[in-house]
Image (cartoon, rainbow, N blue to C red; front, side, top):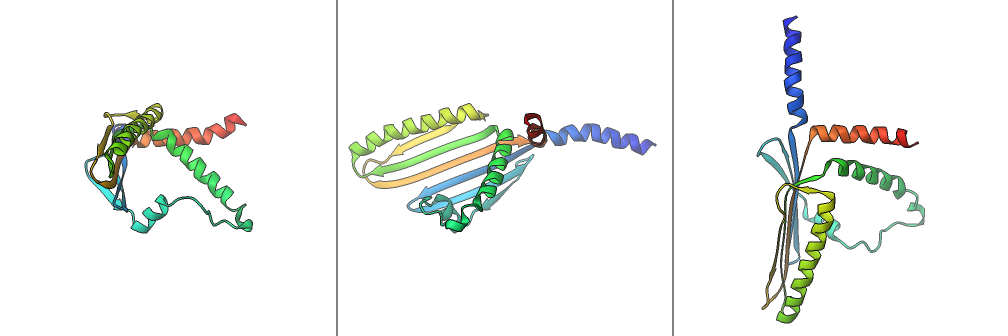
Length: 188
């Protein structure tokens, strides 16, 4: 009988700790001189993170232009269920990915023409400000986002680096799944 109280006390203490355990999912994208690198990272509660480099050919597919989808006449019905599953999963994930712990976006570029580089610097700052405004409506930043634009007036180059860490808890995932399960019944 004493063991059952021990289990109840352990659950009463451990469950809130487990539900509030922070999970961090991060990504970084680097592009420099026609070479791109994408890294994903995962951390559960502590400073130890697992980093997974994404293979170069996958990065190439992700960054490729979406011109020809390759779908033939007979393939038009097949992607719709897959798109619905992806859209539903994206909506579910968006319900608990609301906090950004760290966000950095660095750009270094030059056109070889100082005047054009100067004009494009202003346009790039305006673009980054617009993106920040859009993200600020959707996410809560736990630290101020870091944006830099480094114009190189005497040479031609393009380097881009984006780093982002999303933070959420197991409890937020459970609430999001419960709301997702409940919402189709209440709407219909």
